[in-house]
Image 1 (tube, rainbow, N blue to C red):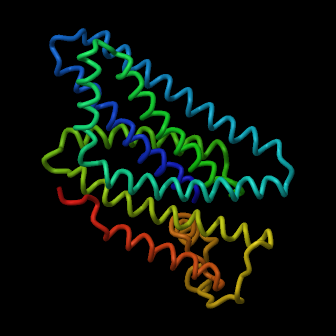
Image 2 (cartoon, one colour):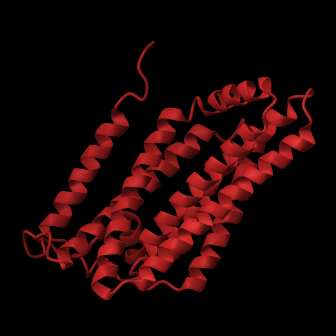
Length: 275
């Protein structure tokens, strides 16, 4: 069931990168006084640089993980899982804060660069956008797949599917802007991302318990495995996406409950201050 998370993460991260690339490309196309061909060369050069940087990070994560001993791998994977959960939360609330003004902020930077006759800003913005989303995806995916035993081939296929769906979704959202709302899209997917972050957080806590650093605080609080096991098809999907446990212990309930209390408080907090 981890393949679903792989496809979802790649899909969402790719759409965010495509959004920035689309804004940059539209800005180039709307400026008749500039050489559009040159501008787009700089744009796609930045995209290529961002992809190279993201791939390099993914390779480094895998290489480091393979060189470690079993105990060190557990520590490393636990750290990456917790970092991935934190990055997902940070990314969700960053988009809530900057989503409405992202286009205006990018255009302001590009207008300033155009006044200085510099195309480097286009390449840099594209590279940062792609590298940021690609690097986050690399960390997320390593955190999702660490210790899961998921097939590398199946995960790669799921990643390709997620990328293809992102391109199709971006095209549909652009074409149907009057029907499909970007705001609604990000609101629905941010809840799914927060669910995934909670599941990763719980995986990290489970690893810390297995390492003896965190106590369970109790035996199993309840047992719903006869209704829905967390190892089957549906239960496994819920477990990997939401942190569902058929036989939870108290520390798991406290961590997941505390996480959602914090998330609900942050979601209800105003995203901007009055002028």
